[in-house]
Length: 287
Image 1 (spheres, rainbow, N blue to C red):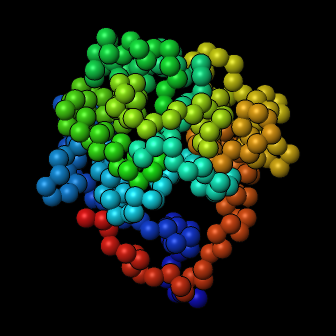
Image 2 (cartoon, one colour):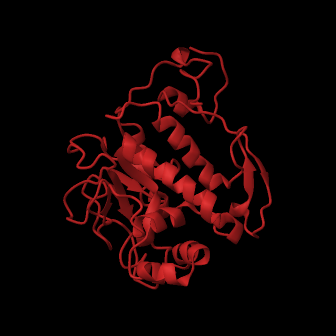
Image 3 (tube, rainbow, N blue to C red):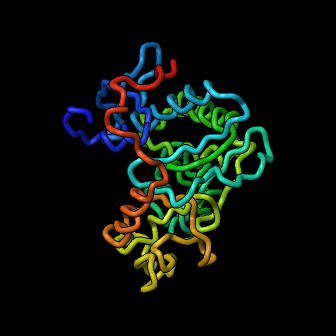
């Protein structure tokens, strides 16, 4: 057994997660909000907000893989896997295939959500925002695609960041860019999945504390939404199929804590011994 002290990062190391450190130097931007701060993060790269830097990294990593690869990009803190999202995937229907996942309709229609509406309207203008009013917002925290589909999306998003510079208008969210690119036809291989019908079930807007949209909300379980089975797993809207991935599950704390604990300890990824943990990451960071 290793004599090293316990660390919050130990579970990641035991699961063989490769993590690359990032030490950005951030300065207040022209806007007033924290997210609009620009951050210098790599020599020769433009200073942009933290929310957008991750797309530079995704693009860099994607370029290290064969074009036959497929990628699933997901937020870390509020995502839980109920099964392998890659299991049983059909062959790509498009070289630039990109599966996008909507938030709940009608709760998260643009016209009902000041955040999503503001990210688009306040950067590209009211006229460009108008076609989005009745659509459900797409979530930038999870998407799946071919290597070329993901790389095309990341490169297109970063190009739009350089052109539109929404962070200089106090709009630093990558979700605004995703929805604008999708609605304007800039993602030719994009396929939109409604909440409750795709690999990712983005449940945040259904939570008991999410009353901004003025719709009735409640627990995921039998007392309200009836989207959990007898074993506690979160279900698709058919009421029978377990969702592969549940995003924004933390909005249902403490209801869903038992499920998350069970999924964390069910032996899907047997951890190695502590002694097998290397001091160095198992590969160089992409350049």
